[in-house]
Length: 294
Image (cartoon, rainbow, N blue to C red; front, side):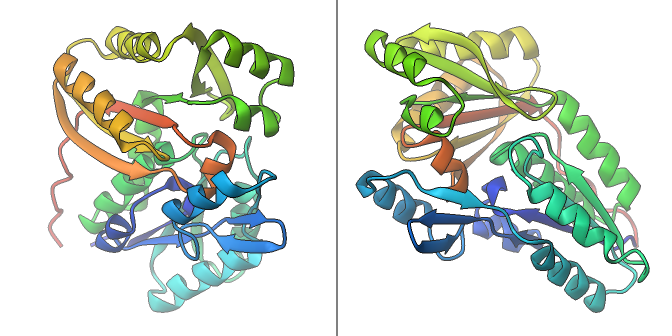
């Protein structure tokens, strides 16, 4: 049976219960409130983060893991199982240096012949999480590295994602949009539908006036892409689960939804999108992988 271990970072926003169930290693990014530093999903939970964010006078900052942090994980996994292959899947390189840190760590192990493949997800939040979970399920079922990498590449082509933000404030402070655009959008109740392009960068797909029309338009775009085929859905939210529930109800009414996974948007991604954000990740439905014979 193949022996593959899956590593990711905290921006994949995978619930702890799923990380433990599928034996996923997670390296945290960090969020900084002034002189206070927290490890995303380790020493600060989403609830704690959004409470601190609401009280903060200044937007927090974020930082990537060092190559040494990845190196320690790769060495530990190799020591546990010297014949294992490691697949390490990370936040878009266009958004963070996390991928580069992991890549540098893997290069330090070449002489020791540790098999590490580092992947730029070109995505964020549960957009990464979907790839990681699928990879981990295949690994548990006994699939080899090449089969898992092929499935990740397929998912990268198939998955569509849209982010709906409640306020433009965090995008503006993070340098994603100009201050004048943020002020005008707030005054006119104009909200962007955001996605991530093939290069892994956030962009505005459309700008819509009003929350109701915003959701309606997202559903229309998903319908244009997936038609009537069965789909699997991931829904991430920062603070308002009721909004996520509304999105899920609408998806169920218009699509053949085979599975739904809720997740919270954690501290690092939350720093850049803020409260009230909902992210919807849709892909063609697929059954869990059949275990291979050992």
